[in-house]
Length: 260
Image (cartoon, rainbow, N blue to C red; front, top):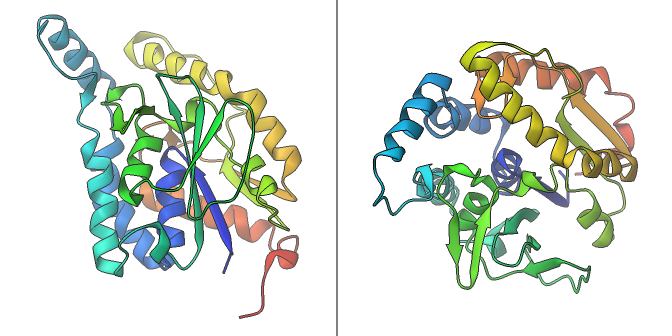
């Protein structure tokens, strides 16, 4: 069992489940129950919703979907596991997001870690379910997440692989896991339009991701053609490919195992 886990964007949800002590089977059931509901955006539906907003000039929302659903699914699991907040977690959790008002990155930790970096704010008083919602609040798709003086958006817009904060916290060995985004095939039509938007977002954070890979002791990249940002065609296939990627590096991961 790890002592620390960190996550960004949709990875913050998986990191939170890990920190709650969820088993692989519990995480599988969570994905089956919730993923399509919270993160499956079809191109045609998106364009229809955007077109609809054009005629709703008095809309009070800054996203196509209410981001509250992101926190709700996490809160549901918290209740099942008897977790009231960050301090009840058996594993230290770190979640990354960004504040639109100051443009600073915001890193939410379980405990006060006495960390200091320019243009990064460190918080410890955020409710767990709200922290995950903040990290997953993808711009325009979900409403932004307000908390005190902050207005949070998706953490992946700046840091998709939060290794630096674990190093700053003094974590001894860091294993980084993420999807391989090196392959890309342009397409035409509506699907191609959305695909290039998602690709542009990959490019915005790619330099930071590359630096994070260098900082990690070991990095595993999962190749999965059935998964893209806010699209997962086959949950079981994605899980299987993640498992296969880890098992492929089984021997290299031996130093990360701890005595129980």
